[in-house]
Image 1 (cartoon, helix red, strand yellow):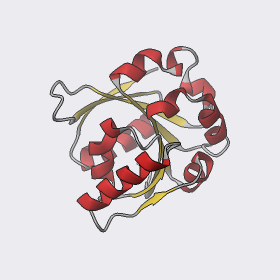
Image 2 (cartoon, rainbow, N blue to C red):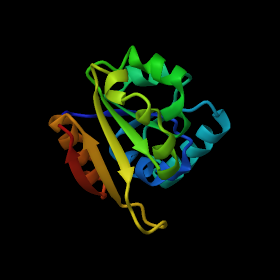
Image 3 (cartoon, rainbow, N blue to C red):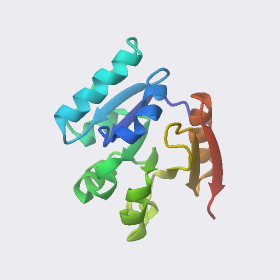
Length: 171
């Protein structure tokens, strides 16, 4: 398992991922990026209100956040933003990239047009899909990817912060 200390969250204003970010902020340094400065500020303040000792920094650009991070979470509008994907591609080499898919993004994701594995050929791509049946409790996630090492790392992180994971290694 890879030693993850810093996680870049690209598309941090996606409120559906707040429970995950809240738990991650208790153990990891978070670097938040979002095009909407007001929303990302609100997310940061909400996270700090939950955990005042958290290390959470708002980053001015996705490339800087991705460069400094050990792992990258790509979520919200960023999944479909070709410019964001292109810019972080340059600094994501050998890193784990977690694609946080939610129901509406899953159906329109660029993943259905071009595989993230092809977009990031030198990164380890793990798709994380919320499979919780209770809208109030987002505790179950399906993890899919080709790299067993990255799957183990992401599963360990999610399990370590209190979520249940189901791992599917795609050959």
